[in-house]
Length: 407
Image (cartoon, rainbow, N blue to C red; front, side):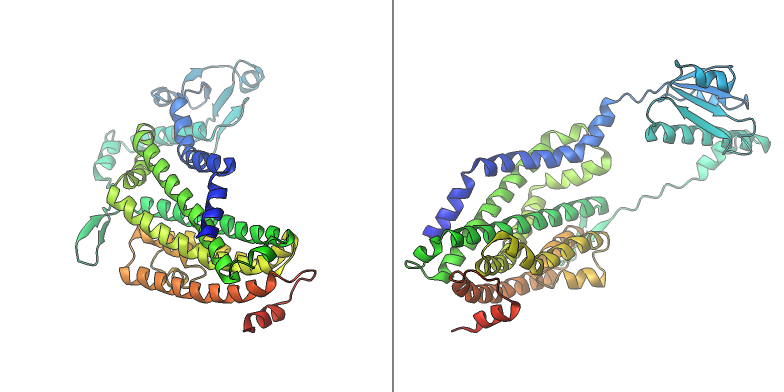
């Protein structure tokens, strides 16, 4: 308990931890809402000078309420040379039959939003003229009356047979965010364990500490203490993000984003997701931190540790990469197996859970993960108790296995 307390308190009192804990969730929320906020602040009115050689499309374009237009009869070369015209839309004589005969000249930076709006407006104007050529002025209304905008309402079936509202976009978004949080925390705090052990080993502090405490207890104290720091940070992040989402985002978010954010303001949903997140965070951390502890004890410097940590780094990266695919298709065979295999299950299973996963699969994943943790901690402790007294040579894999066999 003394080791746990020391590892925990020395880290949570650091200014870096406090600043990161408070600023990072706000930064994450800002990155999510910044595009929507910037678009809401922009009035979207971009003056465009039109040269319509068809003499038919102009009336329809001028009805647009988003973009601002001016009209000129000047020749194209003269209009392009006039610095007062920032954007010049030249509609060729054959544009109605050949829609590629349209050019937008930009004196300032090109705007994808402007180009998209223009393309939609011109397309509609050309279609109206083509329809009128067929001799039926109301064809547009006829076509509109037969259009079918299909919106499938997705419902989730629980294990008890009850139905719940679900949203594919929300599930995908939340799954990706949860997987990334796990990836980030496992790497950051796992490497923190390795770095801490290497520093204490170089300072010969461990040689003094082990006179009062068992090496295995020392390693476990470090793992639990640093793991508690990670859990504390995650809990604070969840509280801050949910608070910001509840009071800020509803004013500026798009309908799709608001659906996802509304889920985060549902208390039962937040508690459920947070519970699973903590279980997989603790499990994933203990699994990989034990490997990082063994690596830190086996080497004398961070450079050597960086070379060995690929054994712990590669599975985490694989888990993050496949978590995206698991969010898109949570029922695929690869998503199922990677969410069960302990070394990838924290990221992949958290990516699947928001979409609705059978409880038996979640329980199986958690049980197998924590069973593997006991083996990894046992293996790491074997290496740790020998490695902390070894200096001057980076051990080979064969030597590490030999250390693990020592009684």
